[in-house]
Length: 550
Image (tube, rainbow, N blue to C red; front, side, top):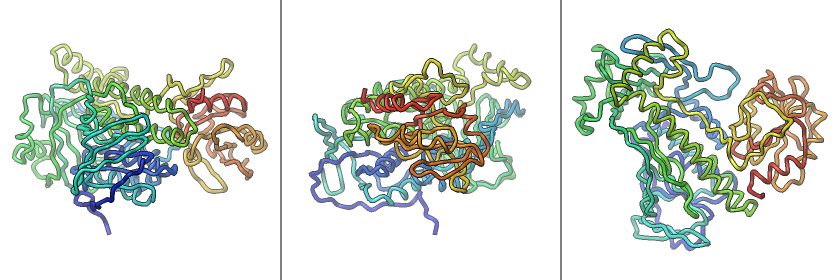
C-alpha cells in the first residue's frame, strides 16, 4: 500500500520528565535533520529528534538531488528508494526565445552508480528518511516539540520546549539546529543570517499532466510565451512538472498565486489543447545569506538555518545534507572521547567555505538570469547570442551552475601531498571520493560501497600487498578499514582486508593510481591524504591530523 506523504500525520506522545543529558538533540525533521539523526544513530549515538510540527513538508519544494547527495543516502541505508522513485536526468538545454542554443551533459561518462541528478518531491525525501529513522532504535522522534529557548553551560545545552502538554526542558551535550530558514533556534539565541536579497520574484507551479517533454532540464531566456523573463521546466515523479516563471520585483506575490493568474501562464507554455491541473503554487524571492559562523558553543547550525541560496542550481537541500554528512562523524569521535572538541570547529570552517562557494555561484546565476542594469542586460543578451555557435560563450551562460560537492582543499584536516608525489587527477585532499565499478567475492558492485564505516585506507596493488596494508593500518590511534584495489582477474580473498577488483580500470584512472598508491579517506568519504608508497608513519600522522589529535 502506497503512503500519501503529503497528508501523513505523526502521533504526538506525552513524555515523563526527562532529566537525562542526551548525547545529541537534533532540532528539525526536514531532510537535513533526518539525515544527521540517521547518520549518528547508525554510528551508535542515541539521538533525540525534535520537530515543531507533526507532518512532512507541503508542496514539492526542493526537488533536485545531486549524485553526491544520493551517495550519502546510500550510506544512510535508503538511497535505492530515492533513485527508484525519482526521475533521473543529466541533460540540460538552454533556449533563447524559441530557439535552442545548446545542450549540456552533467554526467557524460559511464561507470557511476548514481545519476547526475534525480528529481523527487521533498515530501518523498522526508518520508523515505523518516521511514529509515523509524527503523533505528536509538532515534527518539518527538513531534509537536517547539524550541523556544536555548541556554548553555560548560557541560551541556538546555532547550526550553513547548508541547501540547506544556513547557518542558531538555538537555544535550550537543545540539544540531536544522530547523530551516526561519530557524527558531537562531532567533532564540539572538543570531542572524546576513546576505543579499535580490529584487526579483519567481512563481513555482507544480502541474500534473501527461506531456511529451523529455526528462531534461529546459531553461528559456525571453521565451515567446513569457516575454522578457525566464522560465525553467523540470519533470518530477507522478506526472508532475515543475515550472518556474520569472515575475519581476513589482509582482504581487499573493495575487500571482491565484489560479486565474497561474493557469494562463502555464497554458501559454503548454498550448491550448494540453490538459493539466495545478498541484502546488508558491512565489519566492531570491536570497543569498548565511550566519557568520555555524558553531555557537554546543549548538551547531546546519542546512537552511545556517545558510540560504537562490533555488537555481539545486544548492540548498544538497548542501544541507552534505552539512550533516560532514558533522556526524566528527560528533561521534568527540562524544567517544577519541577526538578533541576543536574538531567541531572544522565542521564550521569547512561548511562555511562550502556555503560561500554556493552563495557565490548562486549570486552569479541570479545576476545573469535577472540583470539589474542596462549594461548587464546587454552583456547577457550578447553572451546568449554568441553561445549559439561559440563554445567559449556557453561557459559564460549561467542559468544555474548545478550543485557539486565542495573541494575542501584548504581544510586543516588535510595532509598535503609529499614533495615527490605527483598526481594527475582531481582526487586531491579535500575532494569527495569518486565512484567506480568493482567486483568483490564474485559480485559486481561499486567502490563507494566499500568506503563506509569510519576511516578507510585504500591501497592499489596486488593480492600480495594485502599483508603489508593490514600491518600498516593495524593498531593505529583510530580504526582504519583496509581496502585493497586489484586489477581485474587478480582477486584473492584475504582475511581482514576488503579486496575488490577494478573491473574496468576506472578506479585506477580516477585516482591516478599505480601500484603502491595509497589514499586515506575520512568517514564522510572525503580524501584526507594520499601517497605513492605505503608508509605506516605517514598514515598515522595523517590520521592524527584528520582527527585534530595534533
